[in-house]
Amino acid sequence: MEIIKTAIDGPLIIEPHVFRDERGYFFESFSQREFDEKVFPVQFVQDNESMSSYGVMRGLHYQRMPYTQSKLVRCVKGAVLDVAVDIRWGSPTFGQHVAVELTEENHRQFFVPRGFAHGFAVLSKTAVFQYKCDNFYHPEADAGINIKDASLNIDWRIPVADALLSQKDLRHANLADAPHDFLFTDELY
Image 1 (cartoon, rainbow, N blue to C red):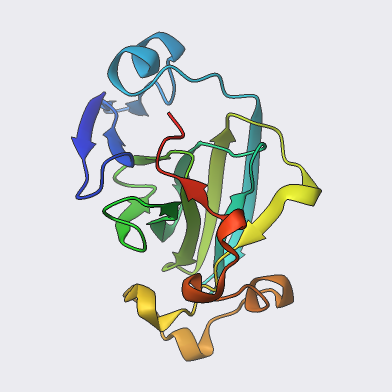
Image 2: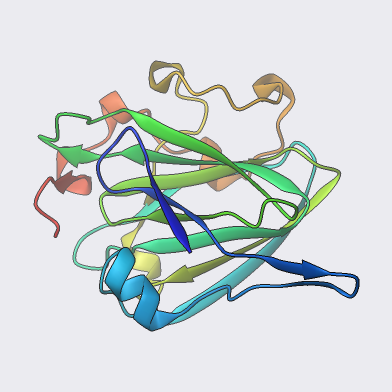
């Protein structure tokens, strides 16, 4: 796999080596050994999958301390714009984001470390999205930043006014209004 650094320290784009022939393709979607060597030593404990239609936006989610999560995400069908927002209080890139298009054709994965809120927008007719988490989901630690927060300056590449969002996601505060004790220090790792 090839590791592509992003403009913000932490999130990484991962491009697998894809082997193609007349039968189709093959690639290792995850290798613990290679991930530990090239990305970060982490033990994933939970895999999740969602299916969504065009215009669905999910996020910007995170788990409050002490139940923070790193995620390794990929789109196995369709296309999404995946976004990580730095919510590490005191970080020089606090409030900035990284966006990457993940598709079934490019097979890219995106590593979203602890200290980042995560979300995505579906760009294709449907999308199947998978992610690995390094901590179990804890409902009492569930938190988020409003995905429509204009101060984040995210180009979601779909009309946000027409996006399909859950009621829970619409209730999240903008980053400027989020309680500071819900955010992170910049020393998670």
